[in-house]
Length: 419
Image (cartoon, rainbow, N blue to C red; front, side, top):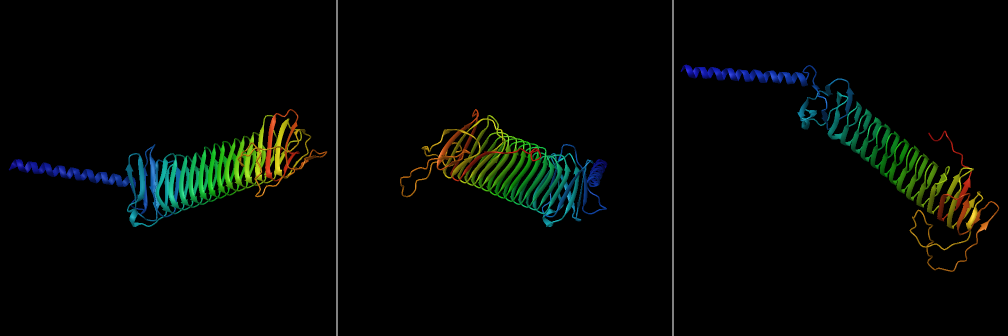
């Protein structure tokens, strides 16, 4: 009997000890994560090297990085919860399925990584987060200021970014503005405009419908555009553009330019390296200093071509062709080939060889007009004209099927225009 009583006493003591331990643990955890005097407020110490994940499905969300090591979240008096999964601290409503939407403000340690998940609608503002930031959401505007690496995926809404690291953006519908990126930028936008300036790295933009503008880019610029205008300036490296329908204007390019456009005019100014431009329908204008070893190929099937170079250019060889139009130049050239020549059929968008004329429905013998060379070295008539200036090292090839060609001096480089 005494033995049984002793066992019972021991069990009772163990039960009491367990209850006390659990109670202390619960109070400690509660003290670390909540503030009972302020409903809708939660606090948590975040260990260094962790990621904060925010699950806020509806409502506006503001996130600010600060120098403290604690996370502090304030909602519209909606109970919040923080749970740990590995190195992640996941912040959400205590019962997320019961709340259709609520606004929330969050302060996080500024050097942590940040991820926003299950986002359906509402605006987001993020600032002063030095770690990586990942956002995936359906609808709402996104504003980001002073962040590190950035990865955004948005179905519908506008994106505004100032001061970011390497940036990747995927947008279905809306406009994108980005200024001051310290790394490469990659933007895909199906419907909406893209405006970018001050990027220290490569820039890649893909747009199905919308205009693209880019200014002051240090790396390679690669543009893919289905419908819309492209305006670019002060590029420190090469420019590559592939377009279907839209006008293109590029000024002050310290590198090579390669453009293929199905429909739309192209204007280029102050290009330091080789130029290769093709458009099926549209005018082409190039106003630039040429260099002694440069290669310049401008070709349109239907449109005029104008090439304006400096007053004292290096030697070059100009190969010019127009089937229906005139060739005009104010430069004294030594004519190497001043008569109509036979041209083999070629691909109409080939950037090197001149196009062959289409066969009319009922071909009739045509007596070609002989070229007329006046005192200004202007050539009028159906012609494949080759002329040399100086040593002929630089190579210029201008070709249009229907349109005029103008090759002239007089370009004045503007130091104020190009940075």
